Length: 414
Image (cartoon, rainbow, N blue to C red; front, side, top):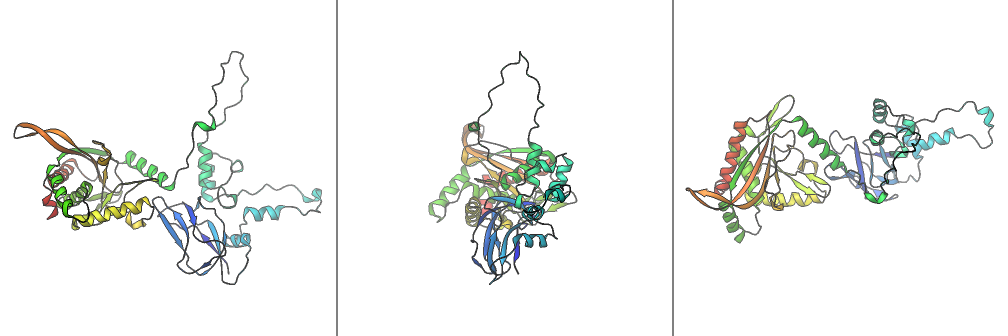
């Protein structure tokens, strides 16, 4: 018997997801485990794999369309089955609720019917998700005035939010004889609207929540980099793989967390999380937005392994190929804009983590040594801290350990 393929909950608590691409065509044979489609989550693209064998009979959703989790996206036929009544299948799966097409067909009068004997017209049924109905009621919107973008024209959450965000039409008034000329309306060429990706929506929501609910405070340290740069040059002269300054930074962050474990914590409403290992989330910029793949147990790994892992994670992040477990979690984050020449900045904490280190560029700067003014190589780092989880003295203790490790880099390699 034919079965419906539904949009899976590819990320925890996700309500919507985007079908980025179909990997099979209608009529293609499907084996258990075959990838049928690619689904875009808020952070990456994951595969939708078949649980049963059969034939892809119908693709109900176009590539690039966002739908609710659980909504039908395709029909899988059993081998030998040639056709299926899709409307009836969807109606049966939804407890007898017909699709808009089926409802329209059932409501249409027969060509020879007498309109006078049809009785009073019944109001057309509005197809909308329960969440969309609830949001529309809260915002005073009439569902009959909305156009649905979900499967078969169903009104979904996004349609209600767009209608609620649209500016209300101003009431018409009689023109005044002395009224000034109306300003020229913007033309369509004035700007282009680019729909938000799932990743961009999630970034906006999480950062807004973080900045508005977490009591941030900031500590800054200037780190002398001459020894580290000299050690890096010596290593890279003979190593098969080049080590970056960022690799040293991630290693130093992890070792500092091992030395000051009280700073390796996270805040939740019910308890403090004391992390057992230093899982360092490294911010990576992609075309879709920022993502933070994680180097697990970085305090136990040699510099060469950390370097290889960061390069691999960053490459797959930019290609949207990370698995959820590779970017979810982490005990501490590092955001480095030094390669762009940014001297210093402050980053926003990624909850439930309690701290993030913002790393600026290494620059020539005047320093004082033994009472004498001289030139030095200085990197400024700013630690953003959740004051609910880490107090000022503890944050200062961790930052001092990090600074000492960078300025004496051999100590972090032992």
